[in-house]
Length: 349
Image 1 (cartoon, rainbow, N blue to C red):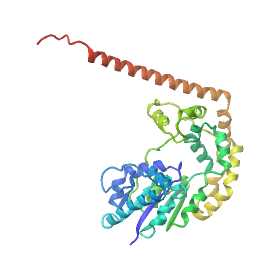
Image 2: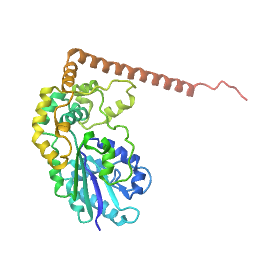
Image 3: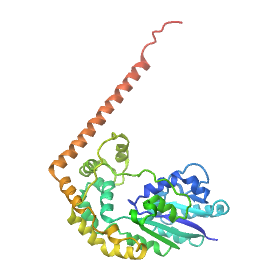
């Protein structure tokens, strides 16, 4: 008997972190329905909290090639011996499954598992802005330059990822990240429906949100702050120390560049639309934004000298806030140090 294996393969920057948060928050409900969920080490706990997702594990597997694949297959061989009875379904969520050659894992498991692939895509203009905010700015590249570079590839290439997985999936579900295409207009509800779960989770808070544009532009001018474009240390720290109420301005693109993006991906998008979600209006998902005129005005205002100066002031203001907070922490530590070393003047009892 081939047990169902549900593989959520991403794409990166398509609410993968939000889906994974929903899985972790509802793992007991999923277990009650017979699902075993892969943790960060590609192990499958029957109880207890969900300990991460195997995103890095899959990336390491691909890098290690034959040895990595053999180790992963051993994990699934051990899992196969446990399946049946209370647990008869398997769930793996890792956007790194989009990396070329990740599909060889599914090919090697087809004899033992029924492979169900769930894949989310996103209109490319939004994806490019989001990807720049997470990766591109840390390379020292301005937003417009990053978009131009990606269009030359072109990237993101959703069709190419789908093409790699098409031959090894018993079922391939492709959904655009747009409310009109999702169950109840929500990606977590849509995902739980895609894996056949009866449980309907409450939408979790959005995960992996971008930082303010002012900080992203600072990163783009200071790439030496990062060991690599995937270094999350500084952005992660800033998310924890940035004061409540600090602006969250997102980068925007001008209509001319937006039109080029639409033209670049038009053929691919129409083919994906025709094959996987023809019931959804194409222009709603991939066409010009309904508020295109307002967006153009925001873009022109955002690229003005006055707006640039305002963002620089925000960064300076945040620096001053953090320096002030650091000074208060130093003062508290100094007071504690003085108390610890103060002579005992209480005298004999």
